[in-house]
Image 1: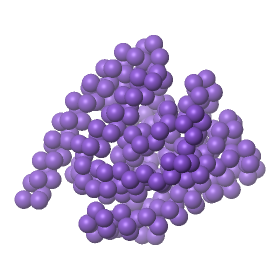
Image 2: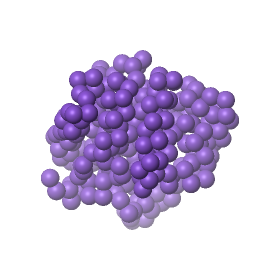
Image 3: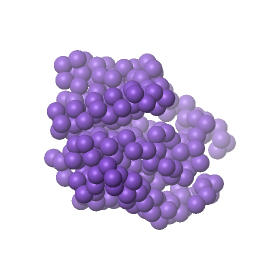
Amino acid sequence: MKRVLGLLHSAVFALLLVVITIVGAIIVMAVGMIRPYSPINQWVMKTWSRLVLLFAGVKVEVQGLEHVQPNQSYIIVGNHQSHFDIPVVVGYLPLKMTIISKKELFKIPFFGWGMKAAGVLKVDRSNRHQAIATLKEAERILRKHHISLLAFPEGTRSRDGNIHRFKKGPFMVALQTGLPVLPITLVGTYEILPPKTLNLNPGRVKMVIHPPVDSTQFDLNSRDAFIETVKSTIEKTFWEEYERISQSNRRQPSPIAR
């Protein structure tokens, strides 16, 4: 019976997801023709994100909002555990932002069209020259529109729940623009939707917002130290919070090896 209810929930969620994605994409595409980074599109993205989490049965706990200055632009950097990471960050981080996302998502009807219209940046992870061009475009947009950039430096979702090596791209944008890096730790999203499955597991997730890291204190020679400073902050909190979140969801801990 539990499995049947789980499949039913996943089916209903998928239907609702299609509906809100189509409606949201139509609004974003209409507005995006004139002003892709408008407050309207930002509101649509935030509303869509919160509805996704609501329909999935995900409750979000946020810690560290005092570290965010709403009028400040940041390079937002977090660990990447699940497809639910973006809705959590966009829905609950009170910042106007754009996102770097893999090119494959832009092929999804309505969803991809809406992403393009909202000014989400497309990156081809297999094409180094195109990836560099995307980062250059990100620098231009951040300066022109005074918004924040959300990026997951692992490059892709974790397949085992662990936090893997951070790539340098987002940190290079921070060094070039002088914007502070805002580290965030995401805990629990891996269990909500594990890799290679469409079965949802409603539960609780936590987003911890850390104090910003001043990028002007680093340069190309100390770039690795910059990356390690941010990664160690994110990873330390991940392991501190992991067991508590797993227990609160009344599940056996995932097979994540430290």
